[in-house]
Length: 530
Image 1: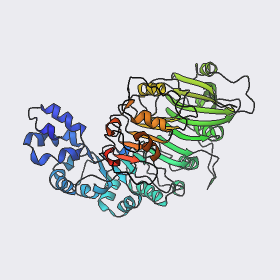
Image 2: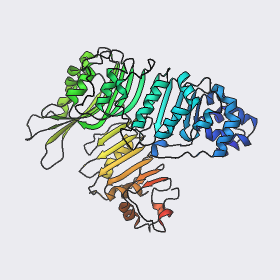
Image 3: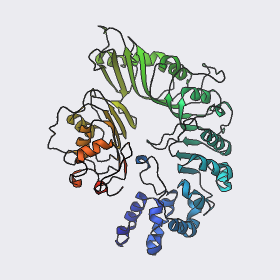
Image 4: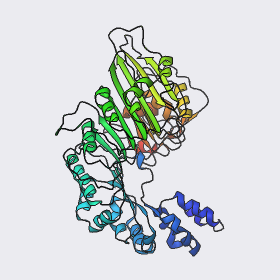
């Protein structure tokens, strides 16, 4: 930022674009020492309508961060700058640690969108209970609210239930609520069993994004409190036959629901008993998104005919249907009539209007008992791809930010070369494969993952640490978060005696070695930013 200030002949429009790339704290913290032209641009109404007052620049890459805002900088901003601009702020993003001072710096009469970042359960609950300024804003002004929590230790936390209840009871004008699903690595699961049966939902709420531990809670939401909801984006951790606290009507139609996104990374055998009946209730749905991993007994894969006959035929208003569905069928004896990729592909003709990728394959095992069918719409519409293995067929996945790879057959260099090209904006990579690579001779061409910030090798053979962490093999210019077994780290560095310049550790800010250890004298030479 300071480099920009020395270039006084930069045109106004270029300076303004520079400011847009920075958060407000970075801009405001420099105002004291600059001329009037810079000051005028920095507090331009177009720039400050959406005010980001956070100091955490890449929250997706860290599970637990503290505010980096200097107390003197915060005090100066709150006393000298916010009083000048508070009447123009419409959207505000603040961290928990600086929220009180920032909210007290002005009355924000135009504020309608509030994002609370990096919150802790007990502290946020206290704010919602006792802070009159925050409560007044939520009650009278806020229509769009986003909550980000640090990782919650207890999945069915009573405090989280109370927070959810307080928000719904306070926010009389709430239109959109994102409850703990703002970032890919911070999707906190909320246990809300007892209050879902009560009518706490504001009548104005029409969009909710939330994570729930079990499908039961989703059914309770849709049975009563969410009667006016038009958009529901939900991630359910487990799908199994529910134990109902109170009876709910499984046939009750949901005519107001227009957009429904349902994600579950967990394996379920209750697709036909629970998911299909739920979808059949959504008679006026216009947009549908499904991410599912389904288990079945032979012979029935989920294909285009089944999707149409089971629920699409009833959705006469549907305009957009995107999905990623993997169905696994098990058998005792390998049958002769397992559907092929071509068989499944034909079932989508005239049923699904979006292009569909299909891949059918047998589980790689000396005595296979499972066949897998993976189908997904194109272009791929999800930020995550879970369970990629050596059967990957390639394609372009520009939206994917998080990729999880797992197999019992080694991943080779050529596969990672394909992934680097097919997932150009990949930020988070998780590799689970304990088998050593068979092809140890790598190409002279270096693979580059230009956007990768998070690499998890905890469940990976040391060969993958050698491949990814040596600069001569793979270039990781933005890697800042690494999870790896300590013994693998010792092995590839030869107990931290190899040249540190050989490794992709230059930008690393967080290192998880999965155990307690006493570092050698040279350990920190490898990680200058830790």
